[in-house]
Amino acid sequence: MATKVILQHLIKNPDRLNSLVNEAKELALQLGIIQRTHENPNSSEVVTYAPFTLFPTPVPKAALLQALAVQTHFNTLVNKISQDPDFLEEALAGTIQADDFTAKLIGIYREVQQEGRTQSIVVGLIRSDYMVDQRADGSSSLKQIEINTIAAGGFGVSDRLPAVHRHVMKSVGLLEESKCIQDTNRTPGMSAALAKAWELYGQQKAVILFLVEDVQISKLSHRYIERELWKRNIPVIRRRFEEVSRKGFLDGDKRLFIDGLEVAVVYYRYGYMPDNYTERTWDTRLLMERSLAVKCPDIATHLAGTKKVQQVLARPGVLEKFFPDQPQVVEQIRATFAGLYTLDMGPEGDRTVAMALASPDEFVLKPQREGGGNNFFGEDIVRVLQEVKRDKRRAAYILMDRIRPRTEQNILLRKGLPLKLASVCYEIGVCGAYLRHGQEMVLNEAVGHILRTKSVEHNDAGIIGEVTVFDNPLNI
Ligand code: ADP
Ligand code: MG
Image (tube, rainbow, N blue to C red):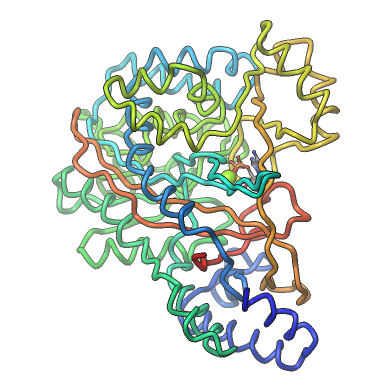
């Protein structure tokens, strides 16, 4: 690859490298590819560029197209699961005995189910993540890592990164290659689903509430979505859990109000990890779920994104139940599944334990957590399983085949990170948007792709922006 040769050349010419890197960073700043700093996470006085790769990374075009092509089916699948209480209860029965967080979510789910759902509109803004598994025989195949059904990010500030990569490619004389970098403009598509939900809610003065984290590093990314909404004259407010907890209430018709404003849509950009909650804000989550506001996602859709559900979907015959007359759809979805294994109590779970202990390097052990940095690899799998293997605590986890992605060379740009040539691997994310009204899917789209790249020295992707950086596929 031409970029490989150029990278070698740049590493040997630090002056040239520094000047190219500075140019890339400055263009990123000019284009709004920015984020707050870890030192001052709640200040907009000092910002930095959002981390990115100096060059786009080669990605097999077929893998990217395959991931995009299957997305509307994943949207449909998540939507169906979220409406199937028997499936959710059965899939998560063992998990909730071992995992307190999932148990809390199911508790809210059951309360809402019992009370009867007040709102029949649901918005799904999801991201399905993949790695390209490189087999020993040289062939490769697209494998899903997970589906994110709550607070799926990555679009926003990174939308304009193709312009930076095109410029870098042109600067090093790769004019033809620069033309192969596609535009990615995912934010309008994702925002459109929120806008449509707001319209259907039908109250011009009602707002879209972004439920946001306490430490708002990615606030500037959210702002891109907010701007899309304001452009359509849709008012947006941002509130932390604690603020909704103090000031939010439901009226007699279960309409949600905060600060004198009626809430048409609750868009969760927070609430996906145990430490996002206090005793009090668990009640706030319930309050919002019970309300007439449209949720993105509702509690059932949140549960549909658990690792346990992912594992159950990979069992023989399960996809067929969701797509009874569509064998091609089943096949298309299943083709992206890696091996996934139960750790529920019973002989099947026992076999999983034995298999993992015998060859821990072949697997990843995953708890029901989101946000990066929670999975176990190699000897850590042995340590954790030795401790929990004899009792129901093991059901908090699932086991997954470890994907061995092809490695590429690139230079990662992040504030404070020394410049060096790194062996990297990437994860393709596909953004999906859908909207259900009653029984009908009124919108179902594959909005676009996101590429996130990390150094191969990290097993897990870690916390947002600390390990992975934004990237673009250079189609090969
Ligand atoms: P999270 O919800 O925390 O993002 P993921 O399932 O996406 O959990 O895993 C986090 C990271 O761990 C991924 O981004 C990827 O880098 C790595 N990872 C997860 N599953 C696998 C796998 N099966 N093989 C190799 N790496 C994996
Ligand atoms: Mg992930």
